Image (cartoon, rainbow, N blue to C red):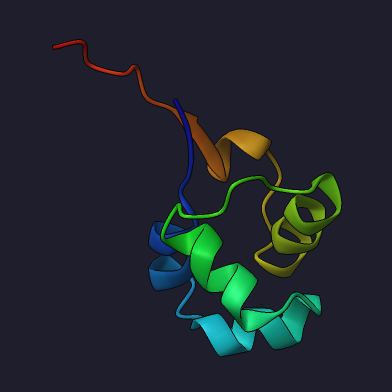
Amino acid sequence: MLRLKLDQLMVEKRVNTRQLSEMTGIRWNTIDDMAKNKAKHWSPENLEKIMKALDLEDIGELIEYKKEQKG
């Protein structure tokens, strides 16, 4: 399962949802859903805006793969 590490990154960068929204032009509710991994999909445009705003160089800093546990 792919997950965004946005919540961790926002803490590390000391940026809240509203600030990231202003930095990227993405609606704050969308940022909030992405940070909580509730968003149904992530547009490449939004991911790119977030990477630029948080000064990330590799997509792996933003997205991680977690193997789903069976059971």
